[in-house]
Length: 162
Image (cartoon, rainbow, N blue to C red; front, side, top):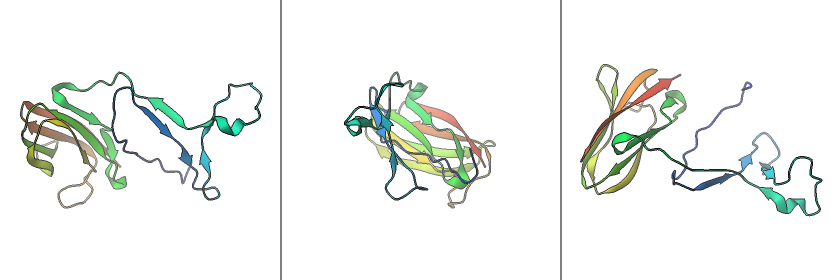
């Protein structure tokens, strides 16, 4: 990575099986409204008339998604809290009940309460941006997110880097 170029995290709306994610890149260092895409022509193939009809977005497919045990799956578990990167935690409730999701330090101190409420059966997502209850970035190190809900008592690890 060269100096001055930042990488960004993007939150996708869902990770559904057999979904296709299509996207274009916007080049901010170029003239306004310049987008990058792919040309759907095989290597070595001559550029045909009407080539502009073969400009396609970049894309990837979602297949064979493996969920973690206990109905709790963590996504992006290495974050930089100074950049407000997010950890995403997906969980599935089989029935309604009280849900408590908390972040702890390695020695068990409470850092932040992400959720404490009753919810119905279904799929949910919560995120953590690497801040404490006071809104300040946490120190680098290992953290734990604990999810307690009906039929769920799971802990997932998160690494915060700077």
